[in-house]
Image 1 (cartoon, rainbow, N blue to C red):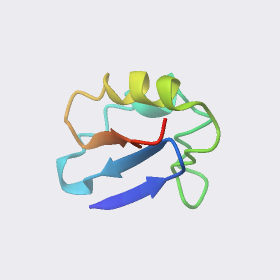
Image 2 (image 1 turned 135 degrees about the horizontal axis):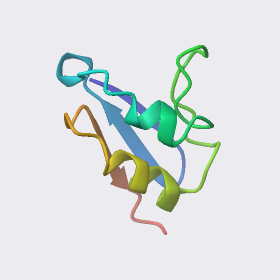
Image 3 (image 1 turned 30 degrees about the vertical axis):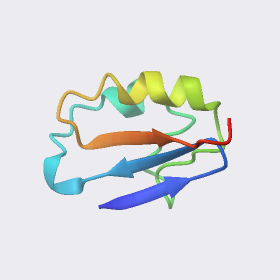
Length: 70
């Protein structure tokens, strides 16, 4: 499992669970960009927007944890 974090949110990606539906990339390309490394940029949008996109992940490969200091 990989994690990507900033002060507001930590995004977790479990590659073994990913079914490559593309919901994340199509839904929030400023954060999820397969052409960039790392492919998840948690600084590109606010935590609420990122969480909403992750909630639409059908496989559960993407998950998140909000920071407690919000």
